[in-house]
Image (cartoon, rainbow, N blue to C red):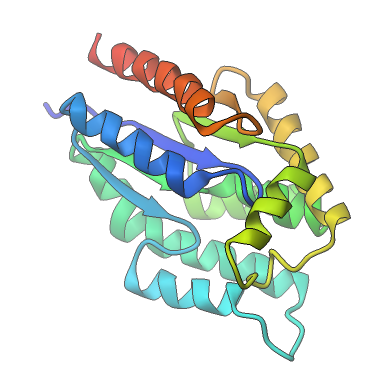
Length: 212
């Protein structure tokens, strides 16, 4: 019988270094001989990537908060059925750049949408499936936004006010406290080498637990 793969998500606000640290994480898995796929949300499949473009591209017509929420879950439904679930069942690890915790943080915390509405959609789209582990890269909003601006043109979310991102960060930290067994919080405000030292230790412990 094939051993079930691990569903590992990486979360965090803008400018916390997710791309760089995801690359570090996946290199660690390669070195350990762990079978895995790396994916992202919104996105991960051809159809879901088209929905991602709708969500992130700045446009003149304002997108309603409910439209945004439903598009996020539409992309997630496709992603789960076409990519995430099959990989996990085949024994591969799935490393996902953001998942439903991002919805609770951005649409719930940032936009102020009802947590119960998000929970209903979570149950409808995911059933019982939840991440096994979540890495939260955390940094003060001012630090993250400064880094994000240095990257170049901002997407539709990155153009929000600092108060929006303070709410997003607060929601993430609340979830980390509420789900302490699942979450691994990394201080992403320090130098990259120190961030990856923390991250490497957490990943090694997760690998060790899976191989045991």
